[in-house]
Image (cartoon, rainbow, N blue to C red; front, side, top):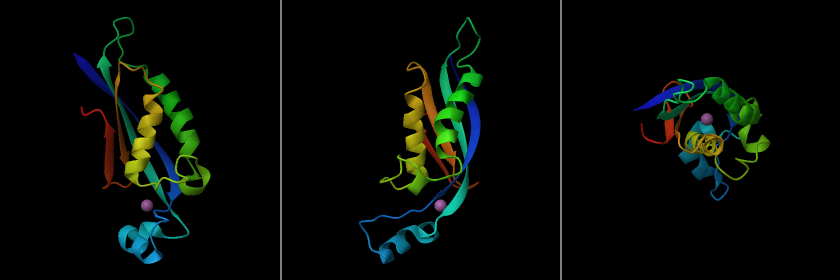
Length: 137
Ligand code: NI
């Protein structure tokens, strides 16, 4: 029987949605306010879900203290209080939509969590806009 556990986290970042292959008018039509040239911020809320068998030695799927440290080191330290477009390698050429941010986070965490564990990341850009990436459970 597999069990799912979750660690919640958050970070604050600025971004601008802009496709350099389009003119200003098309960027405005497609991205609206999120195309603001002077950037804007979001309080991103994140849920990191891990699913797997309970380890009989620990009674845990994953030690949530360890997961907390991985999220702090790999995600919060990397993106919190940053301008995603200007300050991060990940979004130098990748448009920092919620979809792309969620996928980038999933890929970073996937490499750092035991391969036998399933991983799902849920990113809330606002209370109403949510993106999910990874295993479907
Ligand atoms: Ni935005």
